[in-house]
Image (cartoon, rainbow, N blue to C red; front, side, top):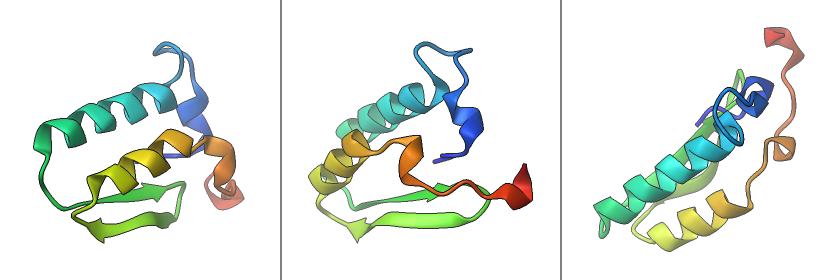
Amino acid sequence: MDVSLSMSATDLSPSRFVVAKELITDLVAQLRPVSVSLLVFSGVPFEPIVFSSESSELLDTLDRMSIQDFPVNSEFL
């Protein structure tokens, strides 16, 4: 999932970031039960959720995530 500042854009309401979180939540709900992982990136990758069969853990973390949780990578600005 892209967590760069461009995901704050409001061309999708309320923002690209929120819409992406909603789409991922819907996808994980449809795929249950299955092992999942979430890789986020902002120029460089981060992995807040390791591969797990506990999709509820991924959904909880995704719900709490915000773009401000990740450093801005000025190399890509």
